[in-house]
Image (tube, rainbow, N blue to C red; front, side, top):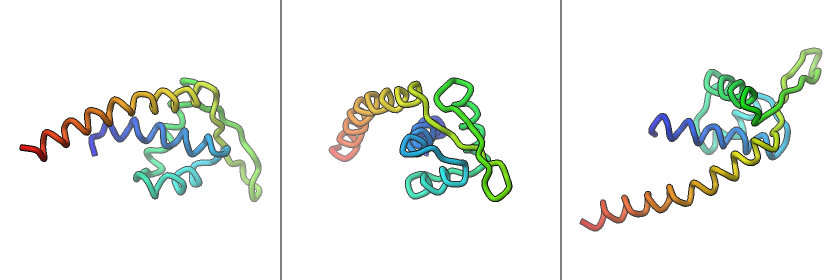
Length: 105
């Protein structure tokens, strides 16, 4: 998959996983893996970037005598998902055009 396209999809997949419930890194990966591949080395920079732009907030909770970072979606993050869904309609129209043009030669 094209790197830029995958990056955009990963961002929205991460936000969607967090929208369902506040979550932590390993669980986010586990929730997303059935749909798109992601590794820890990919996830954590995404989370940091999304925190910096205000799409998520972070808090810590003690779990088994260790601190675990939890991520929570913000209103800006929810708006990012909505924006993506609105834009996806035009992407699907372009996909249909390309597919139709390719197979109807």
